[in-house]
Length: 305
Image 1 (cartoon, rainbow, N blue to C red):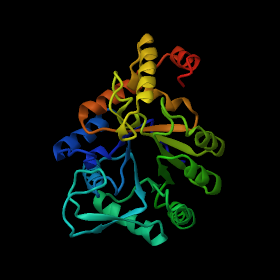
Image 2: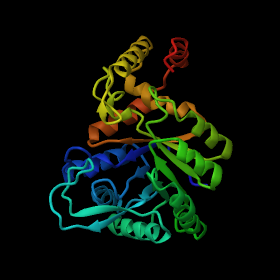
Image 3: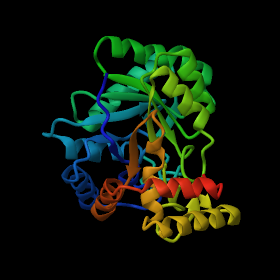
Image 4: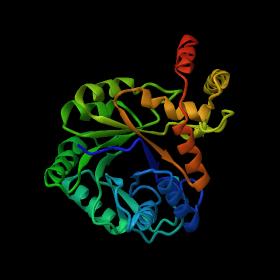
């Protein structure tokens, strides 16, 4: 069984998610994570049309003792259309994403990822966002990854999504090792609890991502976006109520947001994105600071969790 570190570095931001990050700043973020003891790193071809993988692989070259995950499901194909990427990353559209959960697509995706990473292997391969491709992902992508695991090419396999229902099918119908669940088990959204309970029952470990719900829980004073959209007023009000209870216990909202998912026995790791060294150090320090049990009792008594 693969050892999963408690805190992971999510590499979507260094793929220029929403806004550009310079090469030096991206490298500084990864170096800061390493210095903070982070040994789990997650990326994907989708992130910046491969930019995230290239930057992460370059920074990890020559290092050892880490766990690296990437994803399959989107094959990158060269494009001459020009312009900029239209899927949230500030990069040139020099490739296009092609959905492909076939056996050949999975093998090609991983081969291409290793070239971009410049590394000999990865540890975890995740089926990425198969929302509209469930049958092919279950009947073709999963068996391909299971074969690679049996051969020792990868150490663990799973699925990574921002919904909980389809991952629950994988837990019931396959022999995956891990699930990456983004944004569905947080202080504001606990809809993924049935999946986590199923994972605990089956021995599938959860990588909790999106714990800030894209921004609303990332600052001491709640503001910004929820799931990458302007936060609805009702959720903003609830986040402020949670922040108020946290303040009474000397805890910040992002500190509580990081601690909350780890209360569930199925959650092995948090995967937190960062685009700068200071963000990395802040998150590591917050996670290392204990949260008093009385906070959770008060939040429960006020029906906020």
